[in-house]
Image (tube, rainbow, N blue to C red; front, side):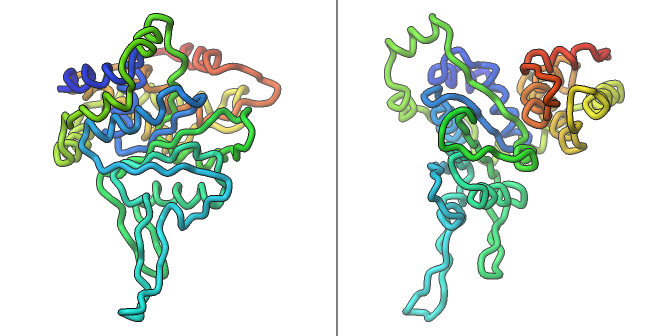
Length: 300
C-alpha cells in the first residue's frame, strides 16, 4: 500500500527511509511529530513533502522570540460595517502545520500551539473554534546548545507522540543531494498518493491491528522498568504506553501486517521514549546507552 508513496518520498528525502516511515506512522496514529536537528538537514522539506503526499492543507509558522499567541491562533478585529468583532483564523487552522524552530519562541507562545495540539480546538472571546481533521503538527527545534532557544519543558514534550532526528547523510547520499536538482523544485511536481478521506480511514484502520496479550505485557514491562530504574528521575506515563501501542500498530500497518510483532515495538520505541525520559545527573548516558538498557528486557 505504501510502496509507491515511499518510492516517491525517497526521491526527495534521500537515505532516510526509517525516518520517513516514523513520520508517516505518527500521522496515522493521530499524533504530533517533533524533529530535532541542526538547520539545513531537511526538516522543512519533510513536512512539505508529507503535506503533498497526503493532499493536506499546509501552513508554516516561523517561530521567533517576539512572536505572540495571536500570530498562531488568530485575532478578533472589529468590523465597522457589522459593529461586531470578527475572528480571523491564524495559520494553525490547517491540516498540516509546520511549527518551525518552536524553541525560539517564548513559553507563552509555545503554549498557545501546544494547547491547540491537545484539544484540537481553540477558544477566542468565549467562542470555540474546532481545528481541521486531520490535524497534524510537525514542530522543529534546533539543539539547545544554539543561542536564542527556549527549551520545551517535559510536560510539553510529552504532547509530541514522536521525536526523530534526521542526522547527516552518508557520503554517497550527500553526493546525490549535491549533484541533483533542488529539493524545492522537485516538490512542485509531487502529486498526492492518498486523499484526505483515505487518510482518515487509515487512521481508523490502524486501531484494528491486533496486539497480543504477550506484547501488552512487554509494553507494561517497558513502562515499569522506566519507573523503577535508577537511571531516570521519572518514568514513562500511561500516555507514553498508549503512544507506543498506537505507533507500533501504525508501523505494522505500513508493512502490511494485521498484527503487531515485537520488532514493530522496537522500531518505534526510541522515537516514543527518548524525549520523555529525564536521566539523573549522576547517571550520564547517551541515547544509545539508554536504549541498551531497554534491550535487556525479555522480548516475547
